[in-house]
Length: 200
Ligand SMILES: O=c1[nH]c(=O)c2ncn([C@@H]3O[C@H](COP(=O)(O)OP(=O)(O)OP(=O)(O)O)[C@@H](O)[C@H]3O)c2[nH]1
Ligand SMILES: [Mg+2]
Image 1: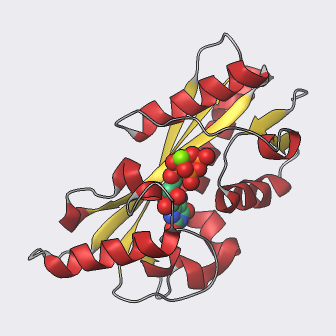
Image 2: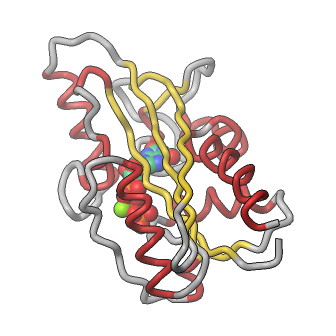
């Protein structure tokens, strides 16, 4: 692979995880935000992760004329009928406040009569080159929501999400474990397989 791919996200937590996951691979990947610090948000008008991932990848690829990977992701809580879903970043308001978002999920779960605490993180990654077809892949991480925050690593809802097969939250498990089991890891793994055939 010879061309540089740009990870296009405004989210520092995602940038860190992509950097960690790409560190082990012999790929030329840069963060678009490092190259273009004034990088503008893309308005996420889609109703699915896939629509928003494609929207972000295409918009950034055309705007900056470079190959781009974009990520649209979020948390689906079964007892909340899939909320916060595509609204995960702005669940408690446009200010994108992780703490307020966690509080809202915990409050809503306390209010519901549904006892299920099952939840999944979902990540759709889209790859776009200017004027080319866009490729998407999806990854999921299944687990449960616990009723208190635990751990300091990660971002977003990590402190209240305990992945299946583990006794700690993603925020307690830390990047080494998270990057092997996360929705983002699974989506990226599939994407790398696809990119081999596209870029070779
Ligand atoms: O605990 C978490 N661990 C994760 O691994 C994770 N991945 C996604 N999320 C949540 O979903 C939103 C994404 O929304 P999103 O895809 O629109 O991204 P964003 O707006 O933050 O940045 P951008 O990539 O759009 O620029 C984030 O803000 C988080 O609330 C996560 N929470
Ligand atoms: Mg966003």
